[in-house]
Structure formats: structure tokens, C-alpha cells
Image (cartoon, rainbow, N blue to C red; front, side, top):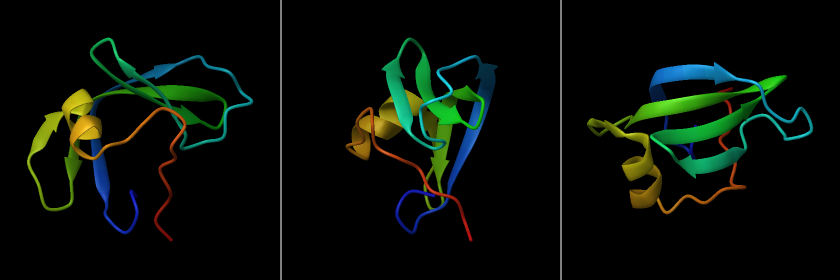
Length: 77
């Protein structure tokens, strides 16, 4: 989730990453996608879709949402 909005991830790839980075934190933007920390690794995301929007390239999504490395996605409860 991003705020109160659900976000879906597509075209994903699991990566090794620093295990000290909190899960959900946006690690990097660029190189064909964005990388988000997981518990014990990371997820490279190629496309994203907001709850009420089209599926678009992840880099474009984070630019339009004004997200920066270090920001955090949450979990739905």
C-alpha cells in the first residue's frame, strides 16, 4: 500500500539485498525498474498499477507519485 491506496506489482524479479534494509523500503529507482526491500532480500519491479489507474512502467509510476529512495510501502491490514 502507498498511503491508503493499493498498489500492484508486475514483472517482478527476486534479488539478494542488504538484510538490514527494512521491508517495504524503496531501495533504488532506475535500471529498468524499482527495487523494494523484502524480509531477507529485495524485489525488482518492472511495472506497477495503482488501484484506480493503468499498469505502467515502475519508474514512471514512482516519478508521478513523487516517490524517492528511502520511502516505504506499507502492508494492507
